[in-house]
Length: 350
Image 1: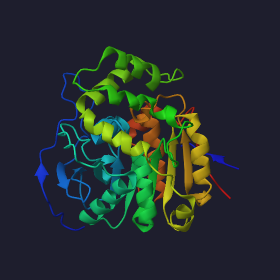
Image 2: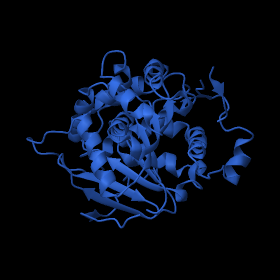
Image 3: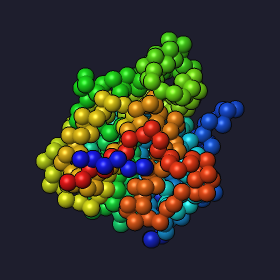
Image 4: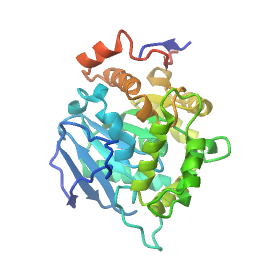
């Protein structure tokens, strides 16, 4: 039965560039994570250069993030990391944000002969970045496509990954059963200018946001609008095409490597249709190392809509990995006795 619980080495720089403002608009939708030293570096790989944003003290335990299709690290994680519930947690870790090739804000369009990396090659890029930063191990935090990519890396190097937080994770190849998750991403294919066409915006509003969400859909969709406007849509289409052609994460590979690794797993689901996929994959893992957080009363921007609930579950996950992290005083006072009211968190036990 599932129990319900409340939930060093010197860096060698190839090239340094100034940190880009995540949202160049009059509305501050994405404040930067507070009180952290920040730098952006370009890491060379056989599949193209990768923008890596570093936040915090490199001597702290490392957390590597990877974004979803149609986003980058700033649009995917900054609002979550800037939430009050994360304030006391941020300085305790070294945050390493990977942008898939060409997905960073202000990216130039790739030449016509550029071949975009496959999903497996994107995972190989993660391996190159981990070696480049001399990381002996880390905790991964991936959303959508980023969750899939970090899992593939964990299969390649299971001893390097102490824990994985996977938001809206899918293990299989793209097919009609899970295509609905990416209907909101397909509008990117229509974006050819810096202005979002009215028909496309209507499409996003009708397909990107579920009717059972209690959040203000107009605010969330406005934020989503800004996300798309900031990125190079030609490059976004290349990533979307690559991810849509992905292979399944083979179960025999999982059984031979990840299932025997010390990795702990936190699956966060915003859509009920992901449950079967996650359950099948979770069945291959050590059941004592798996936790599931269900946030079905949200849209697909779960980090935007439910940052405090995700942060609380993340904190519990980090505690399970041996990190001394606790709820901040402000959060305890504002949250009451439980921060996960109305949310299902399950840990599997044999």
